[in-house]
Length: 271
Ligand code: ARG
Image 1 (cartoon, rainbow, N blue to C red):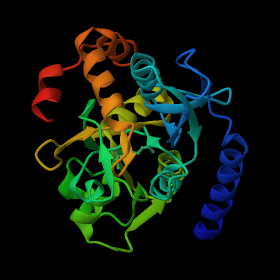
Image 2: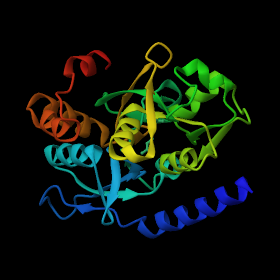
Image 3: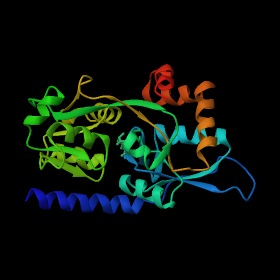
């Protein structure tokens, strides 16, 4: 019964996503020469406030950051909503040149992809319904079901607590689906990036979902722009990242989305 519901939901949502996929913003960052190639950038736009769809256009902190970086680098690009796992696959095959999707830089991914230096500091957070017994990460061990997005560091964090391939972890194609599963009682908690968890709780006060932080159990993570290995674009893009961090543009975008100043020193130290 539960399973059936989940499947229908997943199908509905995938259908919606499929409809909107490929309608990404086509932006020209430079008048450039005609032979300048368009860099194909992929994202999973179900991750507000970093990337989400607004009238078919990908918007969010990442979208603004990317636009500023590419303008600074004088590169033409196209941002496509391809979904999370397809993003990794398409970068590998060369169908895409670059990814921006609140992607945590880690050693495992570094084996297959190249990254820019860190542009955002993050950590995992737990979402539960009001009144839940969960107060810290360790309490997740006593739950029946934990929802995560497949292939994310949130999934990894949950696996670390209850075991890899544990039946108690329900994996969803995107984080919106995992949160819906929490709302309808399919799972008892969701583990995801703090920025996304906080945004959801803030925007949906009536749903009585609470966000739990546990800095003692969850490490700092840093987001980076991701490239296929040995990408020829990386150095140019990286120089532009550094430039907009120095000239105030990055700070302006950060403030627009998070209402506070970024910790540029922490990002530099994490390089
Ligand atoms: N930061 C996490 C990771 O790299 C989650 C990112 C998910 N991003 C998204 N757009 N769905 O695994």
